[in-house]
Length: 250
Image (cartoon, rainbow, N blue to C red; front, side, top):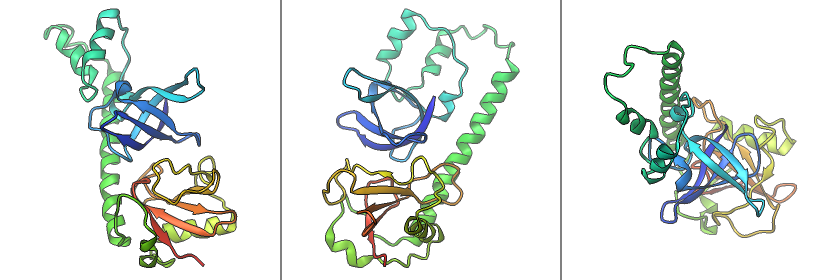
């Protein structure tokens, strides 16, 4: 399976996009493919499998979280497949399988490997959520920006190039000198502005770069998006494209 983070989610229409860790092209997903143990949210780390449809569009065929992604798979049949289609996406499928088994069946036979994998999954989830909390607190102290649904030109005067954040300033320096970047496969890739948060420009005008977040092992939710080549305008997002603040960079 591939890994990535939820980049966009439209709860009313039941679809969204995943920013994959190993490719620049975003992956479309529908609520019918979701098998998560928690509600969907922007910036959420997920694991997924994908395929292209007859229009060459990349779509996720299954989306899980860290816990479900590490489960030992079991054979399925027509009955279990039809049931899973009717179960709400937020309900783990594992709970249904357990409820169908007799309580006395094979409870004394526990696979050591399964126990070890479950233990690792619990540790991974704890580290992930602790990192997210720490990141949110850190961002709030450093960036005193107005979080709005979309970017407005009137916000330009509220930001300066001197942010006081070592990771943000270092990322700006790397952009100006042309790298090297922490995620060479993703940094410098085209930002398509699908959410329409930034002023409309021609395709290829915007580029995105990762701003590392202390305490988080993955890419996190912070990005710098530049406009022009070479860049003439810089934007900072700390919530994975939900809002932007313009940086005054000389």
